[in-house]
Length: 233
Length: 205
Image (tube, rainbow over all chains, first blue to last red):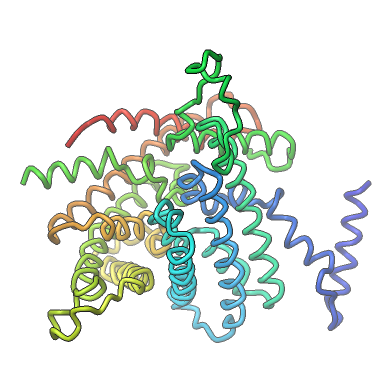
């Protein structure tokens, strides 16, 4: 029933779209924000931007910093490319996009080095790798090149949040099970640990790279079990 | 000589681009459904890494690094352009890919057709930029080292993608739980392969 209603709404939106004015947060625009969170998640469905998602999720704090950096680069990159979309010659568009993204990332890198130097050291090459983070190039190619500025901005924000929540979820489990802390604060009580006569010990395995892959695999499993239309043939 | 061999083996197995650093994951997951395409992409990556890492090495050491410009004039001894490295590296990579594409098209149409769409896509493969950034971080002494590192990393990536493609071809016939089919099981298999590759970490070279 709800689906039918939604379809009707969508159809109405399509009609509305032909008229010159469209509210800033119309149904269609809100879909741009919501879709990447679940149905069209950049990591678990579109398979974009895996590299950084896995490498910097040992702890929550770097993952948060990374998410914010990506949010900034995505939103700004989408807006800039969308502004230039009518002037970019098709043949060299990839180079143009790369240069736009690379300048934004250089900016982010300098800011991180200035204000959160420790995290910037921890993220090492992965800040630079935002440039080739497929999420950004993918959205630029697939969306910003063909849509208006405001819609591209929303798409950028939506996808960055979709990316961020997976990143934070993976980091949450890895930090909690791997070092017993969250954002650096100890969660597991001291008395539980084996050293203090308890029964618990951290699973150091969670800190190693392969477990990031397996954690994402399990998140995909849970997500698709709940959202059956995502299941692949 | 022995150091070069060590570096080569280390780049392939110990510091494997995929299993140790997750670089180039996107294309690794997207293009590993069939072994034949995986081989094509793998070869293209080896090719481009072997070229771009040494080129960026020269760029880093003669233009970007602090004091690197002193060969032009002593007045530039304190200039530090390293904040430009991302833009220059990616520009070199994008143009190199274009150049490689044109050369291959001219001299070996067979290989060109086999690589197809993968060649231009390599410009945005994290493994390529990652190779250059690791080169910058590790301060290699000479261009030979940089070349060997680029070549070794490429081979490591090639091995990983061909292996997963072979496993995925087989796994199609297995009874995987429906929500795990496709992407999910590939992640988990890659994780298990990563655990296997971790056994190389104990090797001191």
